[in-house]
Length: 227
Image (cartoon, rainbow, N blue to C red; front, side):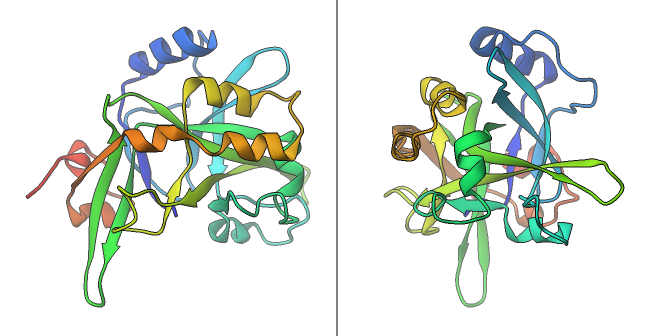
């Protein structure tokens, strides 16, 4: 599962990353950084390929299928399991037509016992920005407005993660991210193979403050290592 994450870089650092890797030079003024504690229902920084160029913008986290009558279903669809995304009616169309990369530089997971839950922060060893594999969709609301939403794809936890949680988000290398977003690729087996990313072996983690449990908290202390 992935239910909370962050992108703790400045806007200038993000601009440099996007320029170097995706030839994106302009950022929307509505993009606010850094963000240390991104929660479901919030806007998340996402990349897509429109067939001619890469684009960056905001999608609402929590997948709302185009046929859904209740937008609140998005809170139940913040993640999609990599093993079954080609079988689920909600995700099948987006897997073929609407794939995205959700930008981050760390995520949180909780070790739970019967009486406690302890948060940990996971990030790449090189501390760089990375991308979660994601799917996005569009729903036309009754008033004619468009709702753009997304979900983060998860997979079985690796050896680093498995003692804390049995699932983890799929983290893509830059090369895999570009392949994932390529709209010309529509073969389901090829797409699912991209999700077998070895980037997830380059993680490290440390314990953090339980203040992260509240989504309204959003500051550097949330990702600071504690004993």
